[in-house]
Image (tube, rainbow, N blue to C red):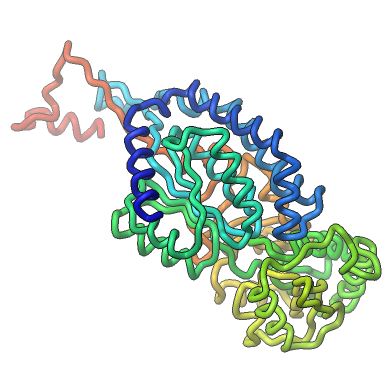
Length: 454
């Protein structure tokens, strides 16, 4: 298998060198083919997501398929403009030269995707690679095996293997791929593995995009609409059973409204999922037993004020709200990535800002309250993205960059930024030969004049 992967990779590199993928009409055709394949296989995709993560039809479409289809449409509409030669102004001291920027594909991309949104987080970066004119090797997670198989079938049926190839397998395949030379590596996953990817990429000076995660805080101020805040926090935390890189990781709530917020959260859970969350078809499951056991271990500190039910045979964990946690508890030391919601209280926002600035930068920050304090968080803290009086929704706007900062990642994509991240923007200067101004040549007779111009 190792030899086959290397042979296939060499064929992909050769295909890129044919220049076919640089043609804009070719790229648009491939995006159209991808869209048709997704629509034709929608039922299979949804079934696979249910088998892997117990995602409902509705959640699977909204968070995986629908976002991808909209992204494809956005690229098809805007690609001719993005790929066109861009004219930029030229300083007067360079006259009569002209300056332009050409976006060219980086080459062959390696896209390593995770198990939590296995369809969206494989196809969304692929859209950027196709749009930019790259070839690609896709490596989905083996933990979401049913979705990986459907993805493999779609890619095989839609694209020539020397153009886009999906490779399945475990850690040994990842290691082999990371030993090869690519023109860009796009990785979505944990910070721990992200460090491994970046270290491997450094051997070949390969650019990397790292979409990681972290502990995304949710701050609820005393000025917040508590009923609405609770509803949107519960929604953001229960999507995919909390296995979302931008899920609210923990709640930091003003001490004067903490008890009321907790009551509102309990009401929202009842409204959304009924008295038996386990029987509700809209509530997901934990991906595998080791993740289940890790989450169960994190439930040992603090006081459970809602939930706490588990079923190992179904990999089910109820949305569990935990109070009286300490910042030194294990649940506050690592990204939770599951349906556990620890809560902390604060007296003034300065202590929250201090805590955030002494912690690793999160992928998302959520604030519920008035605009004045919201703007203070935006100004004084750093995070990949921010939602004011909401959670998750910034990921849905194709006009916004999505990406982390520091330990939560590097590089951003979605919309035009997906095109940009797989492209090299080449500077071009056109200088005519009908005149040759003497200013730049030794012995610099006109230096005083040139100095004034510069």
